[in-house]
Length: 267
Image (tube, rainbow, N blue to C red):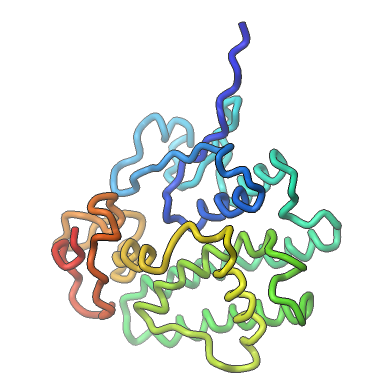
């Protein structure tokens, strides 16, 4: 007797931007319930069964297909899901438009990396360097949008592939607004990218996380500890599941002050 294949499974961190991309894509397609999301606690060592699936890698998300094959890297997984659930299409079908999406998508790696380096910076003297670098990347996105979509809000007629890729990063950069008072200046060179960002943040398919959740869970990043690592003097990571983030106090905005204790963070 042939055994029916199991569901597609994604092993992920719920608050991870690279996992949220997959959830947004599935929401746009109305297929969220067709993929099982298995939550991984990054404050604990990866279980051996998961490391076996990922050949030892700790990076998430990873996807297991219905026949047990493993895929890594969020953009690869995103394309796989687009192909498995082709309707409605999120990626552009026209070859030229798809190429334009690809060009914009290539900009996300530097954009995301710069935002994370900025929030994890512990040298007050380098704050302006990181701010200026991130503003320059916003300006590049602004120029790209002016070239390919000068009068719209999204890149093409509706929220699509580029928005799916970038929206989770815009949401994670709420930690920069909170801990670094980062904001786009009210200048023409940021007007188009500001309109795009606002359209991304407001879309109904992209509401998996909230500003409060990002700030409370990523507070350890603001003090230089990422991916569930423990800060000096701390017993618990801000990424622990319990107590629930909703019950915790808002953290201090004094990023360059003393490291908050477990008690300060309601842990």
